[in-house]
Length: 447
Ligand SMILES: Cc1cc2nc3c(=O)[nH]c(=O)nc-3n(C[C@H](O)[C@H](O)[C@H](O)COP(=O)(O)OP(=O)(O)OC[C@H]3O[C@@H](n4cnc5c(N)ncnc54)[C@H](O)[C@@H]3O)c2cc1C
Image (cartoon, rainbow, N blue to C red; front, side, top):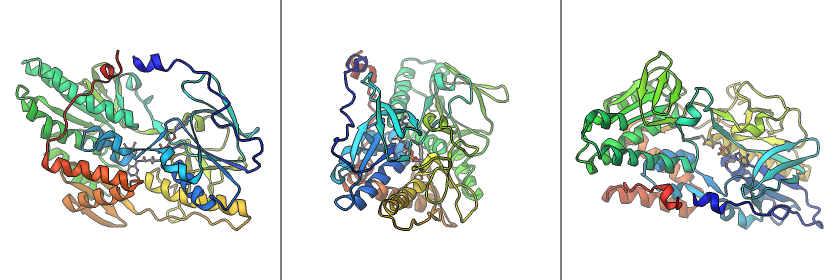
């Protein structure tokens, strides 16, 4: 592939993040360019730029921030994938935040430095920090079932959305080559493993894409050939029961099969369930569970049961000095419930703002303010202008919930340009057909 040709290692290293030797400003190093990392950097930049002598450095393995709440829409073409990612350099540039596109391999807590490497460089950089913020997020747990990592598609990154959309369309193209309905049905069986927020939302979006849009373009494919299966013990387990029931009814009404069990293994063309039954499928998407970043998992520090780092109300990591954690890396007790905050973007963004204030207080010798946040609620879009929403106990379903979801999340996009792009995608779809082109990545990359 072209990527591997171009990715010949370059003699980089040492230059990417070399702080001028004259600089005495303490370095606040933030690891991770997601909701937690980017918002901490931006808030710190706003608070400190031109006021405090401090160098804010953000390191992430990709040079963009991904807005995950719209990943299912990107994976099914309701919005363009590029419209749910935002370049970190243009978000952070004006606040003088230093950015390095590097993958963190290890953290040396004793020597106060991180070890990181750009994917095109053989050289590992060791970069010193004065204060460290851990925001490396989580990764899909694909080791739960044998074969899941090899034969199913993850759903977490922008590249996953791109891959899923093309794969679904590719299966329709392949199925159109045969008149045999059994083969068509096998090719067009779409399985999502994991019936939590992300899995349920994605299954509903795939139903809309396949039955609502793609079938119109493939007259030789029989409607019954499309089979949609959502696998998971409970649909939306963390959602209020009546809302989860509504979501289930909606899915069943649209012909989505619910398998209330777990997956036990994946082969190249089959999903095997815990009860021994198997589902032949060429499209198995894995959304069942996440695990904390491997860099965090290997740190010799106290962890909660889910491997997140234990932090106090000031985000200080238990057992380490000058190290802070937040977002999906932190297990922090919510004083309103006595249990740890759930790992969501909503919490990560609020934590980021509070952590920036804590760091400013530490740098200026002022009193730190503890983090207290009452979770606003939960919203799950179910496509076809339907959603469920629980806003501080106010429960909504159907079109009203869907409209609220779109409005609230559109306003949460990071820039005005980003909001306009997404609104334009939504508006265009009201009047014109969704783009069903298959962008064959291998061909684009020249292999
Ligand atoms: C499909 C999906 C839909 C979701 N929908 C919602 C929703 O509707 N509402 C909601 O509140 N939450 C939602 N979430 C959860 C939300 O995305 C996470 O809780 C949130 O992203 C956590 O923020 P974070 O900054 O801790 O981690 P992340 O946003 O995952 O950021 C981690 C960052 O670290 C980088 N990174 C990882 N490892 C390394 C490394 N070794 N070196 C350098 N960089 C690294 C990553 O590239 C990434 O930029 C959703 C999640 C998914 C997957």
